[in-house]
Length: 145
Image 1 (spheres, rainbow, N blue to C red):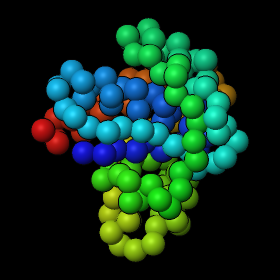
Image 2 (image 1 turned 135 degrees about the horizontal axis):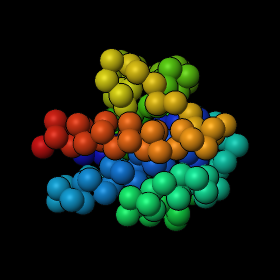
Image 3 (image 1 turned 90 degrees about the horizontal axis):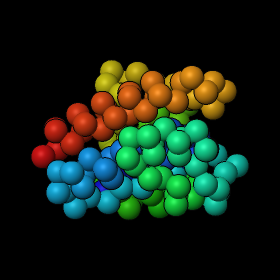
Image 4 (image 1 turned 60 degrees about the horizontal axis):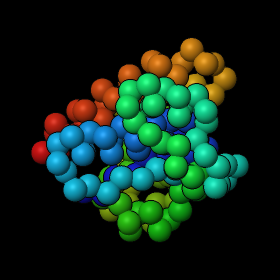
């Protein structure tokens, strides 16, 4: 299984989701490839937001080595599943889809197309966002085994 997590800038939510999913895959001895990207290009090459690094580290997950990258059409060929954090991310990714097979790879991380809030403007959101991401990744691992 090859999974890509996608948010806007690839410095808050998607690196957290990548780190959580890598952690869970390792715990369950799954040889999955997991990565993340942003729909925007503002943070290409940047380290994750320090608040994302801190909340991940508090749960024993190290995401500090991640560097921001932008989602591209080639990602449809590289990944089996593409999980987006919100409606805007979904629309941006779907807009790049070349055909139905590409579109079928794109899913919201949360069930029922619920959105993972962007914690960028509110420090207090990082812990709840981490918990939402963790629970969603746990469900994915359970459903894919």
